[in-house]
Amino acid sequence: MTPALNELPLQPFVDAEGQLPLAELEGIGIYAIYDRDRQLQLIHYSRNVSLSLQQHLLRQPDRCYWFRAQRCDRPDRQQLEALQQAWLAEQLQVPPGNGDQAADWEPRLDVRQWLPESELTAILTASDFEQPQLLKAAARRWETELLAQLTARGVRQSLRFDPKQKELGRLTLKSDRPTVSVITP
Image (cartoon, rainbow, N blue to C red; front, side, top):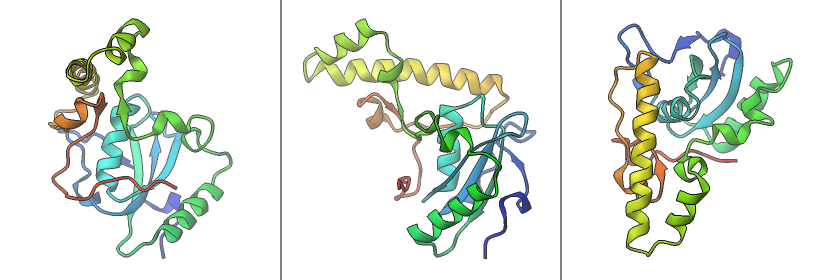
């Protein structure tokens, strides 16, 4: 039986050495994310909690300061959804990431959403050969900006991005694990 959300320890995203202490969370589980003021932002589940938490940190660096997590050894989707609903029911209000701001927490970072209209138009009208190169260049710019934000937060851990995803305009962390997709309801 999984404990109530508030029974789990509140852990920092970034430890005193600038590392993301998430290695023990590789695998299937459920997690909750809190902002700097320890206000709950999101309750979600994943096939790789560690990787999902890292992706959320990239997507929402100003809202990912603390987390609670529980690994599940032999879960199924119904069990994870039930646990998510139980943790949500413990709350007085729906966390923003589970409510009206859910799209802000999607784990995939698509750089096209941040491009000026003129650059996006240039990419969309480029040839099939040029388009991946233009998307990769845009992804690299956003990667540099995101890593600078994380460095300012004190993150010293190296983060690797999947180079093939950059050609699609996406910033996706590269994992050494063979299966790392996020379970979506």
